[in-house]
Image 1: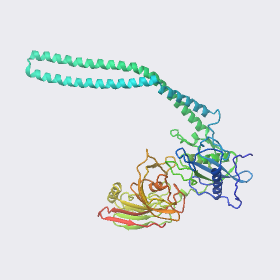
Image 2: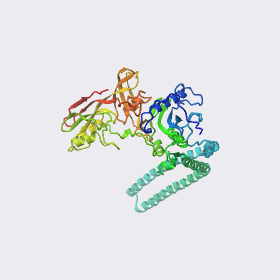
Image 3: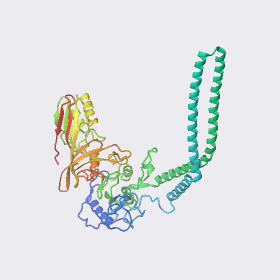
Image 4: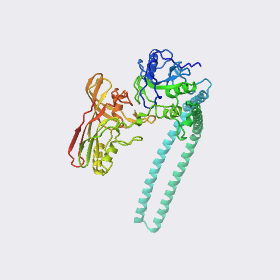
Length: 558
């Protein structure tokens, strides 16, 4: 069998032990074989001339640069030989398919394909729409209609104001008449006033009809254009929807038993469309080629190559898990029946850890939360600060938890024994009168000494729980920071969060428009280590009952 994309290792791998199970793609540390395959692909990327794509590494033109996720899949062929496959997510700038990388699951751009024909139809509709919208006659009629409508509304408004004044005048004349005229004269005046009112109303009605007729004449001409625009938009939408549904059906994925499911089968809810780019990530491409050609998956890894996007955090050459939104449903089908490593995200790392109470009185508890210890029960792990304290103080009322720390962050956490105390402390946090300081060790040198980071955040809907920087839909997030010292290529930082968004300090540290230096051990935005080197070191607040100023400091063990 001619396996064009099966690549033999250049390095000597004869003494490397194979993994017992396949990589769990959503949280992993790369196996040595995957690391070696990655290194060989990266060496190729540094020197290749097979395709053109501005990754933003050596280019001065950063505005058009786009980094890209790549993946490697170590496989065993039917001759029991080890090799690897490589893939990239999405498409390259020059739309090529270099022989180094496996083909897409479905190539929508094959010559004469339904997609290209549909795309051509949509392009023709767009050209026609552009022609109509820029037609001088259409623009003139549109402007005339707008101007006429504006003049009419202005004139009608003026006439209605006159009516009000005339009505007020008639009322005044009637009152004078009652005081000065006899019965016959008053009766004559009243008839005259009624006739004046009728005449005024009739005039307004005729004026309105005249203006409506004037507008209708212009509207008829305008409607000819707008009906064609509406018809073309409706046709474009119909073609686009058909194109999308046909694409979803053609993106068909195999598993090891060669069972097929397309995107419509995988994303079963008819009310939810498969996310944009579904099936175009490197992981599905790699597994598809492997199963199609009877290659046994051994281990896998994905890495980022190039400049980081503006919204999410991606570091050049760093490994990343498969995304939750697009890839998880697809890979769940593709890896059905494949024995994988355990999902470490479900492991309760807090089970053997003690929760240290550093202060306690009748209404308040202050604890030093260990790293990898939930503040409140999670979806899969119930053990948490909340459950431990609830068990220790079963008579405590109220929500107990006043604020939270990320699972991976260690440090000072406040809890209350009464509902009233909780409400008071909650209010202090809302009013931002609580002073907090975090200490972090960053994986690199930060040259500046202090500063402020303002990067609004929102959850990544396609890859929860990660956060994105979003200046349109994100919530305000502000952090003050100060460099403490640098040593061995690392920087110790004090963070003073003004707001308290999810993952705020982690994103503000790692993002290219923040400190551009991830916190050591940040498995979401940097590189995994023994722990996240982020610690809530200091807190100051007013006691919820006595109003006495209280402060606590607990130094980290890193």
